[in-house]
Image (tube, rainbow, N blue to C red; front, side, top):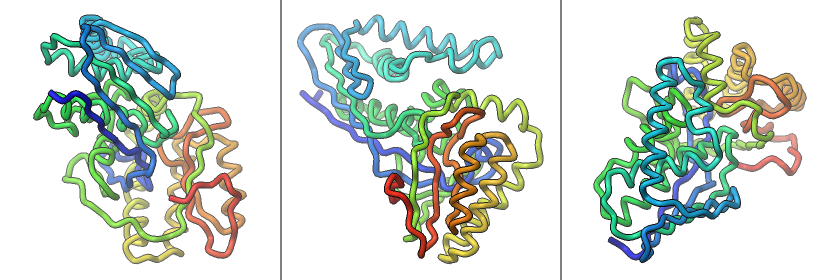
Length: 319
């Protein structure tokens, strides 16, 4: 066991395939240069001190309490699977996912010392950038280093993401655990890709009124049996083809088609649609990246391919 261990995990950004990846279609995604860092120190008492810097929380819990919380969360998740509970009520508080992941590991260990666990992140929460997967990755990887465990961190993150989102596609878990860009599908092995050197930008429009799990559940209820998912798959393939051939004209067209499909399934609120319409009139192409939102003025992250001769306002971040 090490005296102190540190692990870092990056966020992700989906280029194409949000929602449709749940229904067997491919998704294109890449790691984002934003990260979550988890450090673990051994302490001499039996308590677990958890510091969540982005939430301004610092609290102590016993190992027994964290294990008990993990077990009760698993029971709530079983209720969700039986349609007895909304996914938002499985881990309802902002700190619960960290407590769940820590409790899950502690339930398999027999420790005679306490721990100090500090977590910090510059990934915006709930905005489609894979913040929860990065949090789980950082926690599980830090425990793996600290106790020389041989657990498969990717499998741990994939498993825990279901508890956070209900029915996770696995793309967030894969991207945070593997470097670079990827073509991801539930039914085939992910394929590494080279991200094209084009003028990609992203903008955080703010945290949506609905959680990712709530949006995914709504889409399932209203569109699970729809033929729209084949159209999403075709657009993703068009984006991949234009991406590989560095064909910016076709890439712009495909991104606009992708945006329209996301509007059609109801996950791009009117204010975001209006913003993207203005951007399109300037020659840019844009779409939400991530689950989006069902209502409100925010929809998480918007991804944009810039027109080479038209400037953007400074709030946009280059990918």
